[in-house]
Image 1: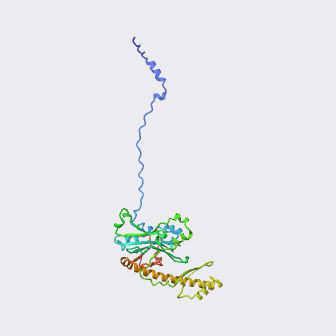
Image 2: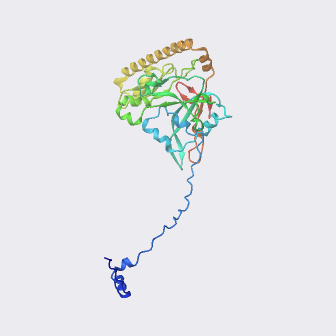
Image 3: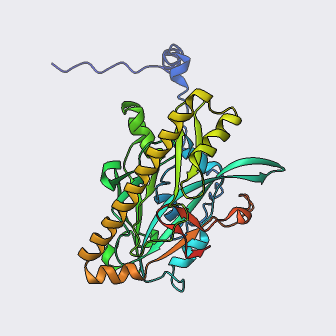
Length: 340
């Protein structure tokens, strides 16, 4: 049996059916094309001045003997040591040599921005020598009763190789100029766990050096002392120039010392003098033994050792330090050969 064919719709029926569909379906929204991405205007390139090859050298030398709480004051100014850099670069007087650097600071009254203020000036000492000048640190101050000479490692210090910026992928032994700086691995954050006496030792540290020839020291007959009173008496006493009785009488006259304390004070001075004489004798014997036991090549190097003391150069950002430059380094190194 044949299937009945569908009944053909009339035009009116078709129109009625289409009109019954929702209007939203009748109008299909147009597809939105992807618009072109608008490029942001180019940002200006940040400018960073190119670092000099030895720019951070002076900062790698620990400022020996600077109180921990004052170390950040060194960064108060953007100090510049281009004089040091030029001396070590090709054409400089220290180029091609083996040198040892240590840092220190010198508080000085300077004129800054129209007023006088105490400024902590960083100083770099360069030792021109094939061998380390010493592996020891001296601990000394007026506030301490006795001088100590300790191995550097006891104060977490050591001579550390320094590699210039452009050579930091090179082998140290391939460098023309061999540079070592005196570094310290003591972390400041760990100081709170140390005893006060231990922390204070860092404040009194001085790089130690024992010259082959004893220096004619005008202070060999001078003691620095602190006599425990309230307030304490801090002064110098020269056992060749000063008389014990006269010295004590003057302290009583100046009302620094009670009359009934005079005899005790004189005995204190005499004991300090005896201690100093023992120290000088021991130092003389130690020097003689060290020279007798020294390798001939090392002895020759020490006979030709030279010290260079560098102060920061004047820039628009830093105060002028020319008027306060000093050849004195410390009680062990004494004076520099070259002041720069």
